[in-house]
Every structure is written in structure tokens, then in C-alpha cells.
Length: 177
Image (cartoon, rainbow, N blue to C red; front, side, top):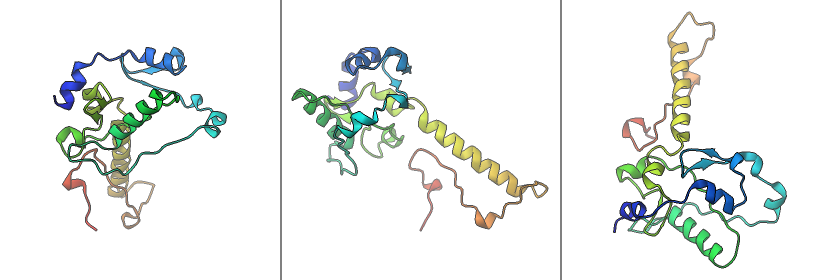
């Protein structure tokens, strides 16, 4: 079975039930459908953090089959819970690279993955898209101010380095060093 076939064969658990398991009130959920939610920063308890352990999984070279940081993080979390530790995994929203086969699946792999895979790989909660648009909006404003010689703000284009961004591996957006 492929990763997507495995992901689609599973019936997801409603995010409200998952929140209950980790003692998060339904009122604290910013819902994105039935299976996704954001949590507010006020849930971070500095005192609990001091007595807890943090395991950071980063810069892992994936296997030829594509298992990388996400798969390791999910597997580690499941293993810790299995031996009675109270553990939760936090993953960032993936870039669009995986959708086009440029890198791993961004949602884990095999039976160690986050679902719904299609949502995760195609926009998720929209944060990356919003950041990309905000950055490019500012770039457009800077370009407009530089081009408009009558503008009261005088910017020296030689002193400005503000590039546009796109959330994928696009050669036209890369710079040479």
C-alpha cells in the first residue's frame, strides 16, 4: 500500500476527542473542520515546561523510502505514550515541495503519519500562504515607492534587499551566490 492509500484507509478521530485526551477545552480550539485545530498560546504553562523534557527532531536525512523527521517524531511520540509517558508531538505546516515529489511526504510515512494527508500537504490551515502573501505585499509596496518618484518616502533601491517568496522550490525565485 502507498502512503496515501494507508492515510485514506483510516477513519480520522474528531479533533475535539483528541483535545479531550490532552485536557484542552473545546473553547480553546480554533477549528479548521472536523480534524484540524489551532491552539492559543495561553495554553503554554511555563511551570510545566520547566519540569518537562523537550525532544527536538531536526535536520534528519530521510531514508530512500522517504521516512524523515515527521515519521521519527510521530513514532517517538507513539512509543513514549505506549510506555506510559505523557507525550505530544508538535509539527509545523509543511511546504508544498512534497506535493510535487521534491522531498518526503511531509505527513510521515507508512503507518506513522499524520492525517488527513491531502489537507496537510495542500494548504492545511493557510498559515504559509498568509505569510507568503504578506511578504509579497510588502515587496510590492517597496517596489511602488521606489518607482514613484513623487512619493514622500524616498527609498534608495541600493539599500533595500526585500525579495518575494514562494512556498516551493522554484528556480526563478532562487538567487545565485
